[in-house]
Length: 367
Image (cartoon, rainbow, N blue to C red; front, side, top):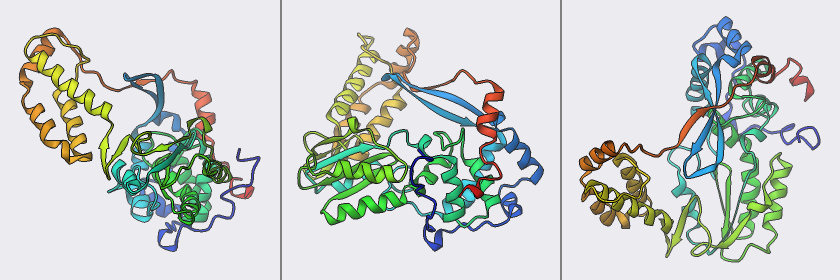
């Protein structure tokens, strides 16, 4: 994609003067990372030593697996320091972005749509992997004001296998910066048409007071994203009424306020009742969840809709949780949870080629 279309970042303007990082010398970056030039070079020359690909398995979605990169050791320390000491203090998130942003959440993503009746939802396909290392390099040089040498090092720290990756702490904030221009264009289009726009990581929601299915917005949003190097999956485009057909980040609209999906509440109540049955030594439907897991779900529902607090807290407190734990141990039940499992590793030579050599010295000259 990068080589067959107009480069969306080639003449990118800075993301606002106050957001300039402006690290011009490698020695300053080395100080920020609490390292030495020799150690930094050694780490960047052997990145395969610090990464492991894991498979995230969700028992509720056995057919859907996600690859998560586990970063370890010195590389993890570099990413954390760069994130906490440079990126997080200096970069303001897009005003339309609600995922992975401090003081924003699935609730703040859904609340702007409360006055709308209809909505259109889509998502960006292959989100992190579609953000190539060359775009991150240009982000550090063109938008953040870093020197080519500093940008090259930062890019190697923040990317894996030539792109951003799930599991790297720096991926959300950098992806958000890459999408700022997309956000501005979509938000501008929506403002002209009395529509509301929010984004939660890669999930896009547009809402208004009229049916959007035949409005052409799905096509326009797809074109805006494509011009910036992203794609949507048209088969995942969703249209409908907010109070009947659609949820936003799994939250539904009910008479002007937010609530969780009815299926979620019904299943939570079933889990609480099932725990009560287990505590009595009666038939248990399962699967088994720990008291902490169920309490976390109760708190989540109450956070979304405080009106459910009294009933759910009453139900939860009525359970003899010590008996639940005892019966679970007696019957040898194990809690069902998401798991991370190692992926079959690639050959070291292959990983070294893909990970360790991402930014040749000619990178800046290709611009």
